[in-house]
Image (cartoon, rainbow, N blue to C red; front, side, top):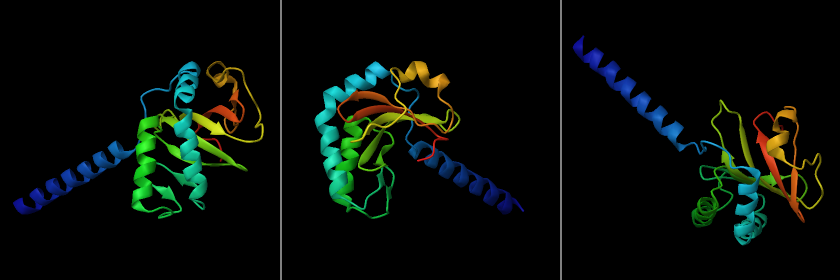
Length: 168
């Protein structure tokens, strides 16, 4: 019977270790940057975002890619995925990027844990998406769940809070 107890304890430790590893793999931040911080980061690193957009468009039918997975799976080879991962790291894109509407691309800058339920990032979109708010930090409490909201940065760039209950 002693071997059975050891087996159970060992199994529990393995399960706990696997759960810990899975949780630690998930990218997430401890807080979101403010609108001015995000806008400043985009201005400083715009060339890298444009480089990412070009890669993403070349790699069609790639729809979504982040440091842990891509959709469709195996849409790019390992070398190309490493290029994406390097740029995600340089740009602090915890959630990577995905296609967004007709010609749009969403860049997910920060992700809070599931209990917080949201993330924040940028959208490059050639058409004016609606609704547009002057300050998303101040408007956050007014934006209903399942509503996509934007703040125009310039040209075709927008800042966007991404609520986990927002439909994509």
